[in-house]
Length: 395
Ligand code: CTP
Image 1 (cartoon, rainbow, N blue to C red):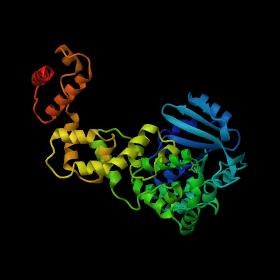
Image 2 (image 1 turned 90 degrees about the vertical axis):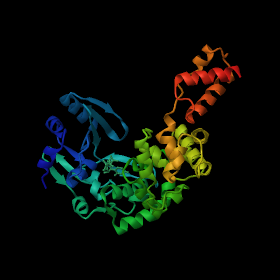
Image 3 (image 1 turned 30 degrees about the vertical axis):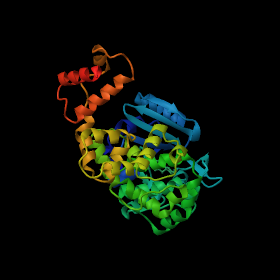
Image 4 (image 1 turned 90 degrees about the horizontal axis):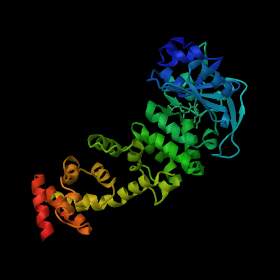
């Protein structure tokens, strides 16, 4: 099959095609997405049978781009404009032990390289510059059948990250593992515990960055991946992530998707540290899980003054209010996000000192009292804040 037309329509690919210093192969997700008619991305993976580094060097010169070499596995990256091209030496891989990083050797043909890959739909290549599809493992047929299918029985044992990947592609593409792949995933799920924390984190974050992460997590839960890792994924879509994402957008909280996603996963103390998640985020997520029931009880029912609401919120960590509101609609928290969060005094410590208050803990106390009054609507202007401050200072 020739894919010349599809390639010509692939945005940003034209200059690359014109600049190729010799034969190479477009591989990986771009081939899959091109055949599916999915929106293109601007990271291209090229495989060369031979030396990747010198190929990348020549390519960069012709494109007027820059090259970074990685050494490991014979890979180099060419950057021109906002486009990244990863150039890799076609290789074979063997695994000395389950979940170990592979031993690699140069492949003699592109087909050999395709045979080391995860799923048939990811094991296709397009020969460049001729645009011939190379599909020795029926990837194109499986795209039509909407199947995620491993290439051989040891695939998940060799590389248990592929279980996460398979579930992620199912959700993203609306595909399904074929029954044998599903059984192999189930059998290899306990091996995910052999992966390093950093590799688990990468897979988890990749899932959390995508749409409908809870659907993927629920699938992994059905395989027992979370049990193997000693954590608990939601057993079905709960809508929590949708609500968190909506609140994050509506109130401009600016939290990345992966951060919101971690709030859907329950784990023992310290599990996020094992994954090497940055400490501040790990602390905030764990605090949210711990504190949410207390905040909910503290703000249940009506009748709280604004200052009481803010005080309850400020006694908890930064993720707790958004997590609590995503878990259950609480009018008091709505009010906090919609109005109270933005309430700020117009006076500050300098104003208090100008009124004669010496630098001391009393400055903080007076500001705290002024804020309470302002929240409760008692101090509608700067003049009234100053008058109240004067009164408090002379008390
Ligand atoms: N790959 C693999 N086994 C893995 C990871 C990757 O065989 N554990 C191969 C697959 O052929 C994959 C390619 O390397 O297509 C590139 O990997 P990656 O960039 O992670 O995925 P893409 O398929 O490009 O897809 P996406 O980024 O859209 O998830």
